[in-house]
Amino acid sequence: MQKNILITGCSSGIGWTAAQDLRNRGYRVLAACRKPQDVAIMQELGMTGIELDLDDAASVERAAQEVLRQTNGRLYALFNNGGFGLYGPLNTISRAQLEQQFATNLFGTHQLTQLLLPAMLPHGEGRIIQTSSVMGLVATPGRGAYAASKFALEAWSDALRMELHGSGIRVSLIEPGPINTRFTNNVHQMEQDKPVTNPGIAARFTLPPDAILPKLHHALESKNPRQRYPVTLVAHALTVLRRILPGVMMDKILRTH
Image (tube, rainbow, N blue to C red; front, side, top):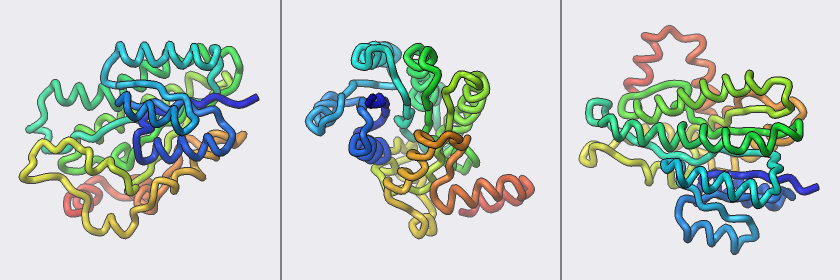
């Protein structure tokens, strides 16, 4: 039987790449996008387009109900990939803006997952996968709001994984690092005259979006999926460095790079 997977954030980048790949791999892909015109494109490409704005609780509710209807209440996998970045010094970010960052990157993901678990739990199998970030491992100046939302997503995923132990549903995080997508161009910069940018050295280690696909395949199809999947060399290096270096040394590295 063809397995149903819902992927959020399919308009571009990792979501777009994953949706095309998994459709070709034999999955029935429900591709969620915020804009109606992008939903229409998903339909034209042979997927089931779902309109979803993670920042809007009513939109999440409608999308979940549509997914349940389209799948007859049986969903194999949920790839929580949608999100955005809010960059700038913390003292320039209002409470409302911080709430919006969390609403998209965590609260919407939580609500969607909660609403779709009833389509997974009765069947004793399934996968829930999140796109995290190296900013879920370390925080850097100017990325505090985004990093906080991704740190929270990592903790949320850890708790969910343990709570679902024995249910047959496995939970994993993908931690990409620098990937060549429109994410950076779509970042909301609080200080337009002093935008937060990636260090020049990051370009050497930037990979295309399809670099995540082997990790995604393993998370979806292995009998023993991993808890975390770092993708780029930057993600692998930071995973190790944060474990072995003293905090003051990590601060010095992250302040200057």
